[in-house]
Image (tube, rainbow, N blue to C red; front, top):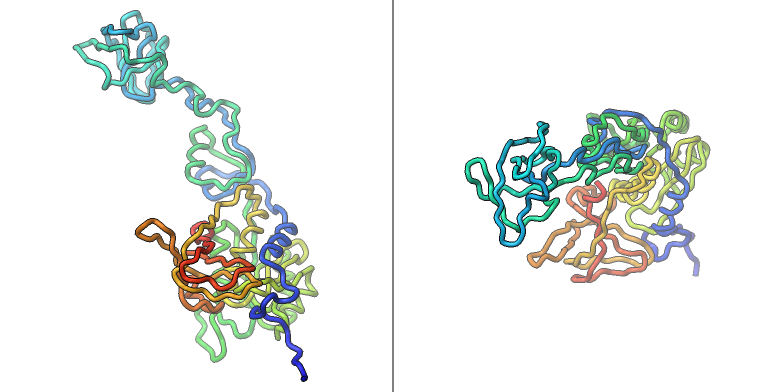
Length: 422
């Protein structure tokens, strides 16, 4: 019986020559390194930037002993014991920012507000709710202990202490922490410059009138928005026609100015366009089949000094491969030593999901909480790699492992919420 000479595809079980998702990611991560330099900026512009130098405190925080509550500052020797009740004369009132310059005498106390500097010789604050007042005097019992309700100088941060390590992405609480040290300018890592373009005579720019057999470019906009949200400087190179010279010029121009180049489409076995041919000539590019769905064909390598990611052409496959492969690589290239947590949780599947073993699948799902507090996950419906709506309606990836087969209703599956990625 004669046989057909056919090529393998993502529909095959255990496709020959395909890398696993973990293998592909490991290969990519081992090939990239940090591509940033430090620059100094004002603290008001630093949120979401990556810290280039550790922050060391130039001061003690708090800078002085101060009261943790509203109350009365006293000397230890004035504390009552046993069943004693002591009466103390209140000689002054101090508030934050206005220290008391006098000296206490025996039998005296000072009314003090939260944050105010502790007067000399005092070491204890008695909450105002725990005293009886009698004109200019207060009466206290023996429930109090020496040193209570006092924040010591340097109790939070000591002068010379490293408070933030280099390589973290700065969040609002960390910005506030730096400001509390009196630091107005810091050193951060420069953002990556990334060139993005689409290829193909069938791809239309937004604003162009529809043409038969053509599609509007969505991949470029998905990639650019993802890159901008990551904090990259994006160079939009538009749409490049299916012309070898134009493609070659585009790759060469991008490689001169960008740290990274992103394209989509034209990297599959048997593609009828020129992208793969030109890429092979222009740089050191690997064309991989990855045992995953969606997103089987991926190109990765370098063109001169620029790292290159050639993602699949289908809109959903572009986004899946970006977040599973490109994002971890970009974080390493950005110098991010503590990547933001993208948690994986277990959720109960509310429907059957058909799957072949031998590949990892990333279904698009809607994650929710049941009335009993359990995580539930359902798909967004049709999961074709060209159905971009399956991504826009989802809030999580359903990650079905390489060797797993069909998921039955009620089984637990791994879920990757978008909130840790987007």
